Image 1 (cartoon, rainbow, N blue to C red):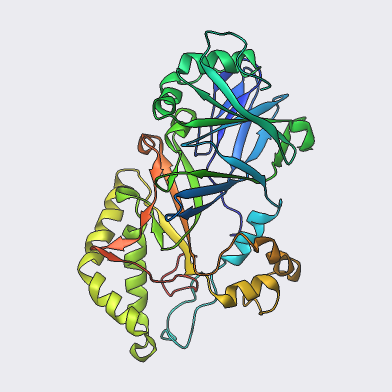
Image 2 (tube, rainbow, N blue to C red):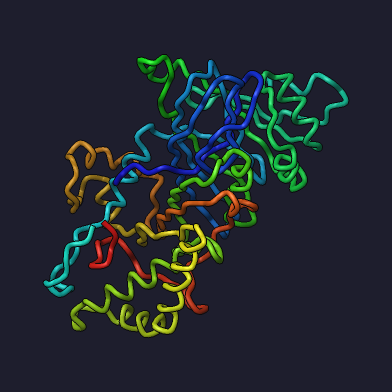
Length: 389
């Protein structure tokens, strides 16, 4: 339950390229006659609306037989990069395990519930390398381009022979976005008996100025065969959601409301009683919309964990407070890796969404969780009677 597939980045081979299957968040490519699969990716996103700054931490997992390859990550402004501890996402998954169900709150007959070197050589190419360096074991360059054709040529001149969808890169170029290019040496990963490689790169954090909480999804579309699964951890002042038809409310609200129906009334908080009264007119409609999506071959998003971080939570990370989930002691001790990243007073929202290829026509802009123009601040950190297994 801990490790889930996440958003994929743009991966590029360093030889002649052709599109292949990817796992989400940006486009993905493998060399001709070579395969580089991305079976998993996780992303931890932090948003500061007052300072208009965003950061996302990513750790793609790769498998394949390409001699070398790389990633391209678009951001709206020039990012700052930082290396994050390798086991960061493992501990984040441990931290967000749902607590056991409160049996004193729910009736007993219920069953227990359950991601350049230098400027371009040719003067006519309008591509600029703004920064080059090393983060962890990865060489990176941050570049900007005025035309997609110039960027294609620059990638080829720098051993990134790219044959993907030019319109997708042009989508970001016209918005004035920046591209971070990172080269990866698969030989640093585990080699399997069949000669292919597998492994996860060092988690890398990108921090940049942004007018909104956004994540590049459109660039993924060209490298996804049919659909891809994404798991987001969103840290922000409020509980967050995906926009409009991507919202998890279509599944979360009916699940939560049904669970409250099993609760002992005296055990409900005043906030839960008021929220239940507010959302009742929406429950049947949302459930019907979720069912309609599935009939159309689409998968609605789901909420997996949501909570405002308290002093007690930070004390758990520090080892000063008992962690009340049944996990190995070694994993509990490593929760300290989250210190300085998980922030007191912020809401962390964990969202899973399977995107069909046709749903990836634009980037994701996260929004506050709202139902009927009222903010949803209901926590979800304990198993409910209606929680999925």
